[in-house]
Length: 247
Ligand code: G3P
Ligand code: CA
Image (cartoon, rainbow, N blue to C red; front, side, top):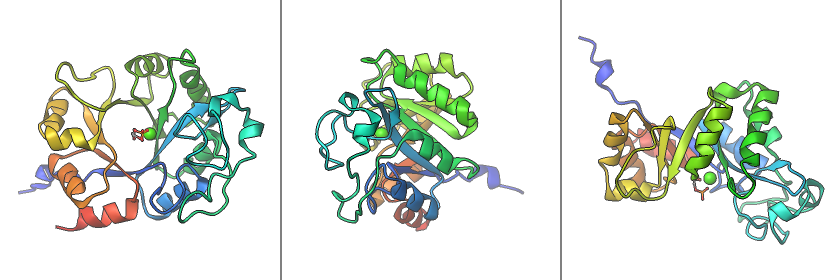
């Protein structure tokens, strides 16, 4: 008898901010390393510059991940490009600002999924989501892209604008109540699963896949695998693949 249907698929490995343990996050080198390490998907955060260009930077300010200062949204693309985004990292070399177009070019034709998290959605009236939709149309990449946000309003608006693109509703903490069934996937912090391992099964019953972040320790990796998590976001893709294969 073929029992293969009973085997649970291991989680897909999503490189969080690229291979960001070994390279400075959100640099092209971090994403290239993630691809070399065999990641199934890449994660990035996007914001708008003052002149409305989509840039890949996590924080609202520049100081942690570059030699610049000030708010990303207060500077133009040209001003943002003057800074170095690599040497702050212990394995870093000088690196330029990453814009979303470059990342879309990198994944094109690879079959690797790109999980794009929109930041500051409310303040700019969903302009970042609107510009993301334009970029996906330009690059014809709907199928390879997954949109994510902590903002339910942003996910709902995006779904109306791009009904064919998959979405993740990110969740920091679950206090009961309804699962985000307006999205394709729910995205809890791994700490939530440690406290509430039944979450993944409840999500499944609600018709949702689970994307879990940020999963680096052997214990958390084993937990996600045993619970049947669909997507696992990690800063160290090769090490995570190695640990998933063990036992
Ligand atoms: O992948 C989701 C996760 O990145 C959300 O948290 O703060 O790292 O963007 P943050
Ligand atoms: Ca993120």
